[in-house]
Image (cartoon, rainbow, N blue to C red; front, side, top):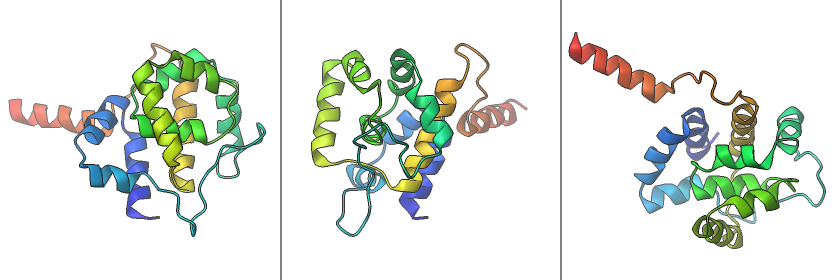
Length: 164
């Protein structure tokens, strides 16, 4: 697993707000290293022509995402960086793709379109981790208990130590 794939796997485990906070503070160079640019020697995930299961993702995750409500999908993706949303949209021929794009603000749609023209995608292991995480979040009960991210847990422990 490359450093970029490892970083993406770690980012996928964070809450959306933590992920957004970290990604927004990365340099342009660091962001570009996280996003795998199409390279002739490397296979990249392309949208399937049929709703078949992408060969790199677990069937149960794709099945859960295929059957998900577009509003729920957008509710989960709205706090993610555009390059992550683009990678998810490019991963498969999702039945909710058009409705999710319509729900986006025009600026976000324009950025997604720009990234798609560039061919922005992720490596297979990174995409697998991202789709798994997305499927878990989409399947989680809305408004239910969400355990704190590792970052939030660390902050809480630091605050406790400071007040002790």
